[in-house]
Length: 162
Image (tube, rainbow, N blue to C red):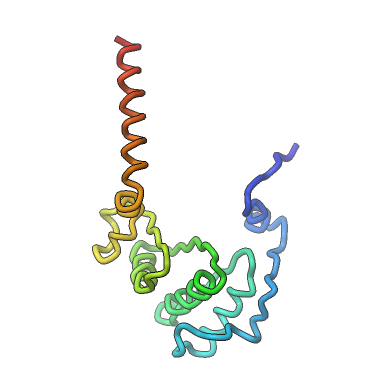
């Protein structure tokens, strides 16, 4: 008996396990974006951005070192987030690759970035985007309320076991 899946991205599990095909978006990769954030992209980079924009569910940009993947991905993320108001999860095979991406995207003040990972492993220049920093800066009141609730739970627990 199959469990009913819920959530806005439940169909991604079917795609990931080859039980369904990705759904194409209504964007035409042949046309490309009406305006590029980086006018210096070469033709293959523009094609990769168009391909990613045309893929509604998932896209992978892969290539050897030095081919401009980070530049291409930055353009794609800017197109999706600033023009389409999308939310994007991006991953890379190393901490430094993700840090480079966050460093470049961090120049755009209108983006809300959160860099997941242990703060000790992040470049100092992107520490302000770490989950811990974002929580400390923006959600201190929530954090204080949670801490108070936990303290009350622990106090109650200590009394119970004593």
